Length: 52
Image (tube, rainbow, N blue to C red; front, side, top):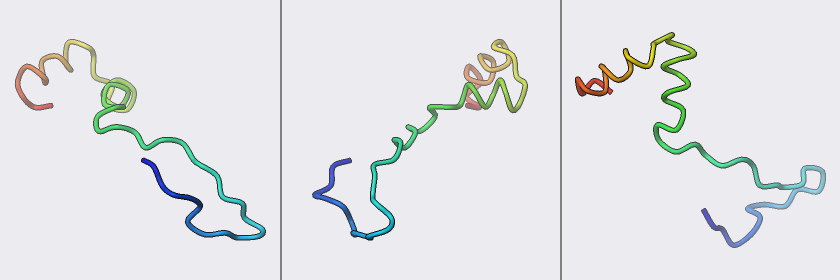
């Protein structure tokens, strides 16, 4: 995303560019494996079944 300049100027809080916003679905596999504990086979079955 491009913008013309700093949205506001604060003397004691300098503005900086942060990290990019993740793309839709960018971290899905990490969530399915790490948080939900699904195996690769389980994920593939969900994809093939149209669930995810």
